Image: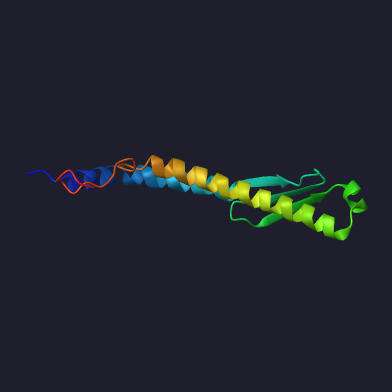
Length: 115
């Protein structure tokens, strides 16, 4: 009698070291990555780290002509876009790593053809 789950566990064990190294490399890449978001007017640019922390803000001098409410909206839009882009990058990298994990594309099978 064969045990499909045992085969998957053995495959995971054989490939765990390489997968851990790849994950560590990608995590280091994530720590160094950032993403930018720009307001609708293009007058405000915000840069966010992979964890969503705001790293920098650039405000075009023409933005000073805006009232405080509009400027706040511009900043909020740019910050949200930067954080969304950073989160998308995290999902992309994690998805790539998890997709490369042994058995990641296979659904668990109980050995009787059921999932």
